[in-house]
Image (cartoon, rainbow over all chains, first blue to last red; front, side, top):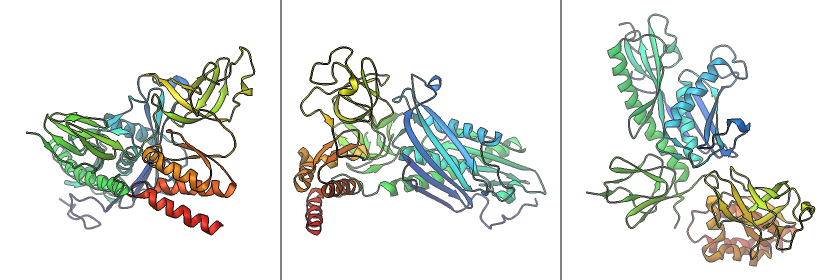
Length: 237
Length: 231
């Protein structure tokens, strides 16, 4: 039991200060940002629009493409080389897969919805921030979504269960660390993303996912308030 | 026991629970999960007897039969013209429907509508695969020559037109411009340069303030002031 207190003083089940805003990119069809402390994600949605190349078109429903991109000087470590990498490709894929269960594109055959996630500043938990922003942007674009997906990373630092790991915890030198990003559909409690890096005992995993679900409900409330804030006062008479 | 958890004209976001119970039917923009009805998109709630639906506040234009739209010609084929509809899908204007005049087979089609031309046309058919047919046969359907075409949010088009066209006739009357509003969110304005610009700015203003009640009077006042300044 050596990990007793978090570097920034918050409780083990608390997230970093969060902020969400909808409609931040004027020319996009839908946009939003979501911030976990120093991890900032901006998402822009374009579409539905005709998909080219043509062989990628699906005549039964529209497809979703996500593009995750960390900006060159966004992280605390070395400069991120611009352009795609193995890592960004994987995160783009899991982001799309975590959003698809709630997204209904059956009304848009042969078309595509593009989601661009840009991260100007990152300090752990970037894929979760990206998913939170993208879920908001999809709803802002007026697409049919059953719910707004909320995501957070949970884990275990040494033998302490924690929610929303920051960079110092993710790279904690004096013990084992498990980093588990999860995404959840708040209305049903179903999980759409569950990944893990590190090792954790089985019963701790179950416990920490429950902590994560609780955090997701909090995030979901923040997301919905942000969405409502943009459209507040748009009641038609 | 059915309980409606929202009021008429409430703003809801996806995932909001609207109704608990089986006595109400889910309408447009909602879905049923178990015994409850949830919102599926951002919009304003409308409780209509036994159904609850959502009038969307955002989203791209989706072509529907009998819509009146402004489209841009982007290709000419043997059988007619391909036009952009400001949606995810292009539309086809066939030779037969292209003009009220008789078009001879093998005629130069760019003499009727050239690439880049804007046309006011009606949607005659939309298939499940979103193949769209448009026609130019009908009262008022024409090629739009001169003027400018601006883009607005297609969800705000009813507001720009106004009740029984009150808003758009006000605009036409005060600015003296010819104005056509397409349901796909394209608006064509043609008039003197000053008035065209005023109409353009006013339409943008209507789009931004679409939620304010009594907008037609406010816009009338705004136009009078602007015209006085210019004169």
